[in-house]
Amino acid sequence: MCANKDNAIDKNKKYVCPDKIRIFNQIGIDLVIGKREGPYIYDFDGKKLIDVHINGGTYNLGHRHPEILDAMREALEMPIDIGNHHFPSPLRGEVAEMLVNLSPGNMKYCVFASGGSEAVDIAIKSARHATKRRKIVSIDNGYHGRTGLSGAVGNTKNAAFFLSDTPEDSLKVPFNDLSAMKIALTQEDIAAVILETIPATLGFPLPENGYLAEVKSICEQTGTLFISDEVQTGLSRSGNIWAIEKFGVAPDIIVTAKGLSGGMYPIAAAILNEKAGSWLLEDGFAHVSTFGGSEIGCYIAKKVLEIVSRPETLDHVNRISKYLADSLQTLQEKHSHLVEVRQCGLIAGLKFEGEIGAVMMSKALYDNGVWAMFSGYDLSVLQFKPYLFTDKALVDELMEKLEKSIIQCAS
Image (spheres, rainbow, N blue to C red):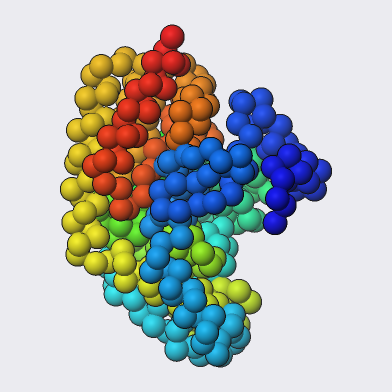
């Protein structure tokens, strides 16, 4: 690892991500992460930051959670490695069983992937095979990854950038617009609707009362499968294992990734009901993934699922979410610059005045010791996602830093 911050920035600017570095440089953020622990990350220059971006939910349990570190050490001492995706694996079977049992509805199968984009691709392919239809409905400015199929059902501009947009196969409708959804599904030629339960990159707009349940009902009437993208909202962030459960919906497919890794080893999965997973009985070689369901990754994921499904974990998330909600409401009442609070458990989007209000807040918070990322498709909304084990003292510290940053931006 480069021991020098400037050297690390130069190498990444030259070989890895020049334009991303340019953008953050314009904002005034030159973060190079060194030490990391619990809710904290440290810049190479020693600057300490509370991480409430958590890389989209990857650090759901915090950075380097002690039980995850122990699991990693145990896995490395076992006579295992990534494994071979062609053959049965005890660990893969155990994690698949846990995911199926922890999911709503009548889930039956689990197909592993190495990341969320790949898992979304699996979900789309499964829906197309099950329905013998091609078209997928998603929302305007949604985000489901950046590979071929996952990218095509996300933001059109991003898909078109790589000439991967497929308008004949991908329909976009506004979020929370039931009329548009009904029109899109009326021809009964849609393989699946894919929705993030609470769309992250769009700024976490909350689904209106009854919206998700009605979408699922329309899907059932038209023979369309419902794919719930829980990559950022799942694994107990909402106070339920899956956020979709809070809205009384049992999807046909659930996609999980990011936090399933414990922040230590990449792993993702598409969880399928019997209809969606029918292809697994027909052609076991129809989809393969060398790194999907790696045995070391499964050992980590098993511990992650054990932690997030503990009653005490879920109880804590629900209690601290209420404290966070009350604290944010108090702050909003004091400062009109904070226009709107969108919150479900420890999933929150904070909308600020101005088209780039969240970009300004991200910089101010960075200066004041908090890392919070602005939403890619709504630069007025700040993604604010504390880790699962946030306590009242940390909420209080966050509110203090948030208020200081609001005052600076508002002035």
